[in-house]
Length: 429
Ligand code: HEM
Image 1 (cartoon, helix red, strand yellow):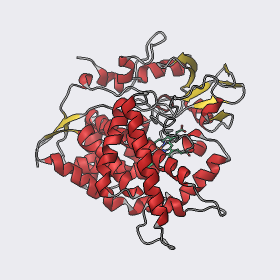
Image 2: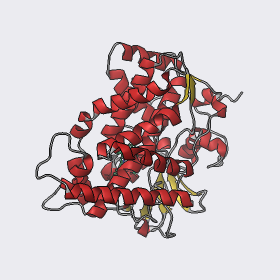
Image 3: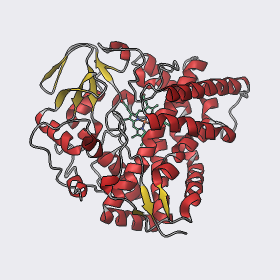
Image 4: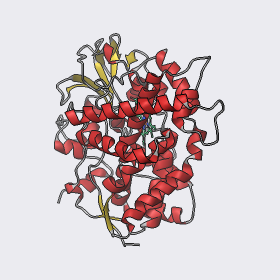
């Protein structure tokens, strides 16, 4: 049997020579390779599976600096090898569906304007008011498999929860939400590749959103009513007399869906998996949840994000001028990829970084990014993560893995890190 568990804890055994990246083994457990890079080649030029050359930044200090460096642009026009049709955000099909003008592809001042407008509508308060609905959705999904004694937690739980949650928040009518589930499923199964089905799904979703936004704009009352949905809030949002155009609102809804969908699946999937592999930590959390306490759940979610977070590499950045980083000269036009998963295990920043410690308090992880592109959905992600994990552990107290960890498959793809499947067993209730 492969001893992944022992490598996974402290300390990670970094290989002795330069590791091969992007292999199957790397997808299963990239942390030893990242430990080697941090130590020997902290800013490392590599050829990605797509053939594109890019720099990988793996140390915490460099990563944090790079995420906030205005000389690194998010706009793909700055890429020296930029070619039409390539998705640079991990969001499939965005080019073909004309959805490129969104937060993750633009710089100030455009970014500042759009971010201000969305921040007026997508507020922490709106998210807090949404908590009862997330709990209801979570319980409803668990009800579907609780009597069976087994489930695939990715397909039956982690996948549907964020898609229904964001649809509800946006104000997509319930009867249309299964279409979203199908489109999103198509995109996640086929990743960012240029496959016809993905492009068709993105186009359908874009068309649907454009029409929904138009209808909501026509019917917008003069004053916001209680519980007004997020799309109406986005249409209403204004900043110094400026509003989102319908196109911008459609791209915004799309990026909210896509930045918030696979990430949250992976938070629930990777998080549950890490708990199942660390029984003592899981037992502590379970006791604390049973006592109705909140603290360990709060620090625990942050630790799960640090330990094996949903976003392995931050989305693409491009040097707009030559710059020095980690002893390397980066040329203008070169892509720079910040490896959040490597930075968040840097022993120069975190004590015992390969140990899962749910009560870790000094935990300024980069799992949500840093700087002006810091995740705007973090309050929603935390709400969904907390609700999902606490409810699973409370309702299925003897939840256990129903597969050899070596047989689990991780979804390939550059930006995200997540399991394809997570078979579990428990006493049926
Ligand atoms: C940005 C992580 C959930 C919406 C980001 C970034 C990271 C991240 C790392 C920065 C990317 C970069 O700088 O290249 C996560 C994680 C999540 C999560 C780990 C779940 C656990 C969500 C949710 C939403 C969302 C639920 C919305 C519903 C966004 C948006 C941006 C973003 C719109 C772009 C912000 C900007 O460029 O100004 N997220 N995210 N995310 N996230 Fe999240």
